[in-house]
Image (cartoon, rainbow, N blue to C red; front, side):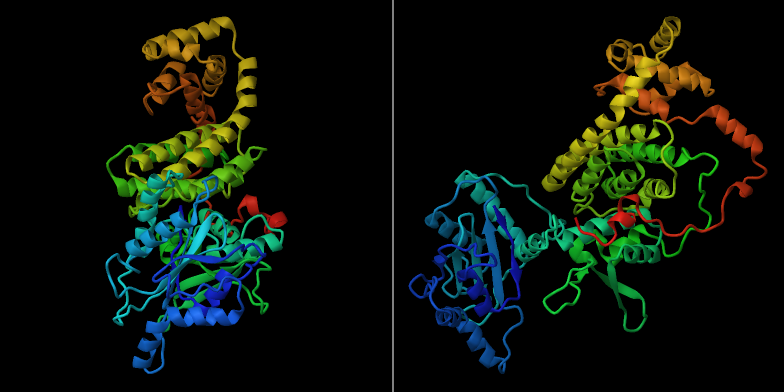
Length: 565
């Protein structure tokens, strides 16, 4: 059951909507199921609009009295509105049940506490099977305003109790960090235009993807504009600095033909200008390596940073853990952009799903996750992935998403835990699509039997407690191929097994050979490193001082600019 509290309407206009046909003639049999006084609240049903004015006057009685006291000025935002909707698949409630829901919600939110004879006037209108609209005027009979502080949170808590008592689907409790959901008008507009998502949702996804890829605030706005998105900044009156911004999707206009603007914080809490600045420096970093010598380095750096993030989630430092979750959310967008293949759709879906898991009421120490965010940004400048490193990276993201779901679950963050779990399922599906042919190819190229027996002996010497489980894993032949290739790259297989097994405990690994395989894949090529070192004239000469232009995320290159799908 979902309540959605808002304020600031015109009472007669809202009543006309509640009792009217709806935007698509979807309203059927509109009628009042509960009110402050059922005898004193005239029910217009589908009567002429004059009856709407009669009901509006009855509701606004004390508002009008207060208006005369204030010299003809009505209090700002004096109309309170709260639709309450059951979840898809729930049974339809009776009018009597909806009346009880309405009375409990206005009591819980402070609009009409039980036993108070001077409450605000309110009505609950039902014009569809699955929801009601509660409307109130927020001036009490004694002229005071009601105590509605945190009314949205209190309405949510009461709906959780109602769900239990009425046998309805239990929805997840929130912590006020969720982004705003599209309104019914926004969804109807998207349908009319043949779009699969609303302008608000489309802009939110682009803003997250761009923020993940760029290095500065200036680049953020530049890339958004290059994608056809209109940008409007708000400047401080004295300093002239940017203190806020709004975005408008291409072609999204109001009835007057003007762009429909959405402020950054109205897209998502962490897209406000202040939250963005916590993650983006004021100026470009001049000396940023381009990894021209070894294109695999950005991938290895990101894998290492994700492993660090996994460790952070197991610590007692919630601020550091929260920072790594936010950085991981950025990383998923860049990984989806940089990873080719049919599984990219699953990675994009994972990035979108994880947006709800990247925020909680815990304040993040963003500096603690600087390495993960910067490593992932380098993927926006990197060439296509070399070898199986992309799959090793996907494997690491799968485990971090699962750890994120557990972290949120342990802290009672129900919505975030559910979002992280959804992201985990998308990442798992993407990983399986990408890994299956690669593991099959590694298995086909398994080394000769005597080499495999040598690896078994080294495994028993290095990991005696895990050997039987590793060899029983279907990925054991693939692991022997990877070990043989690592030796060709200059590694000692026994030392390598000891090193990668120490990164995290293998006891909980369902497929330990697969885990070791991708950890070894992420190790650098020692022979290539030595060769590059011999070619280096000086440390400084290997670093490019040229600034990179802002990167356009691969997922939004020209074929998608200006289009909402």
